[in-house]
Length: 286
Image (cartoon, rainbow, N blue to C red; front, side, top):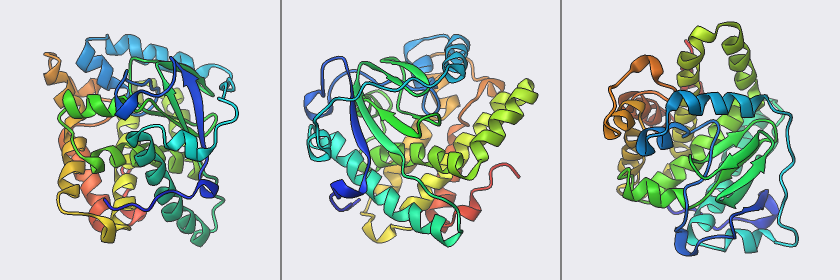
């Protein structure tokens, strides 16, 4: 996807530190997450998903903790530390340019998310982050958190290759920011608290909607899409379906344990956003 280089004045980006700075060329440890691709580590590395979800819930219930930001670094320095970081900043800029006018048209207040880079571990507004999961969005501080080493894992272990697969990850996280701004996230958290037996089912709907929003962004920028991009994105969506991850970890597929949706569902909703370019087509809750 031929994205323009980011404008430092039009993005919010921070280096929140961690285990010693950026790896060169995108290598390094996997990041940590609370909301989005959190179960990848559970299924790929054998962590007990139930235990992991318990940790996630505890983290989300903590009082927000302000991360310790690396002082004195400009957006150019932070985004330029490796090729994956640069891609992420370019995607963030494009996402802002795509979504802010949609909010303006709908007369809904818009606020940009902050893209936070770290290595190994850090603290977010949702609590501690450890190098065991994937990228995540923290609604408490409206921040997207990523250890760019995750992209090597996406490529080498999950088979999701190409720049568009990586853009899809950022766009999905941004989709959770959209849900926060329009109130969907708070409504779902409230419904989950009132009816815990439906918590997983509601989370799946949240994740699939974020997939669709990611597709909407790409669909509204289809003139920038290159041959093979859509296939890369759809392959990435398929690779991180709950059923595929469970099978890959040698586990029995258990739909009642899904938190992100099956591969078929994730592909379907990403494709729906891609083809329509219309967020109104992303109502996964009906």
